[in-house]
Image (cartoon, rainbow, N blue to C red; front, side):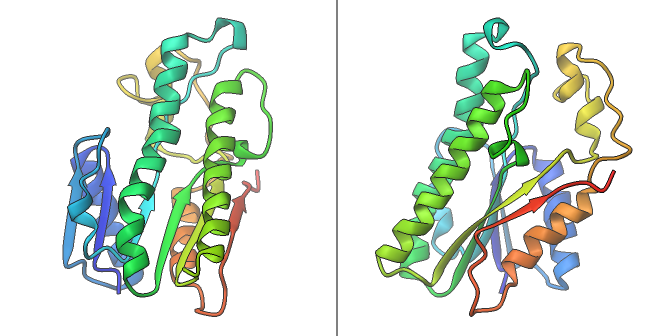
Length: 212
């Protein structure tokens, strides 16, 4: 059962996301923990963890020689180190528990180069390498009851693109036409499908391209 989910980010947004996910699954969440500390997730909250989803995003388009070093470091701390810390904190409990599924959201840009997005692509390549290596590690270590997979969407039509405070538009970037992007529901459906896959399968990754 999907009893507990732990994530970082905005409390109100996280709460709405969890409610939507629980409704989609036709379940009631017994516990909900929203992490406020991006740096060090508490190990204690993973004691009863069964299924969870991870996603962090920090991006900015710029030519490589114009990309700020501090922004580069921040992007890797958020997109790569954040995933590493969550996995590192949760794995002991997952290995000691019953059947579990880890879903890590990455991006199609983790396997496709993109002009003026080299640092962002690099973070997603790193996340994909981290997760795929973990899969091999779990299999070799006799922990096949812990499944770990990637959901890699293309652009997703969310308010983030026009958010002048924290989103893509915060750096004065030009407006983006999201009419042909993926619907958020498409990504959620892919995550839920991986969470609820048959016991006989172990999905490695799902690549989501938009039809537009």
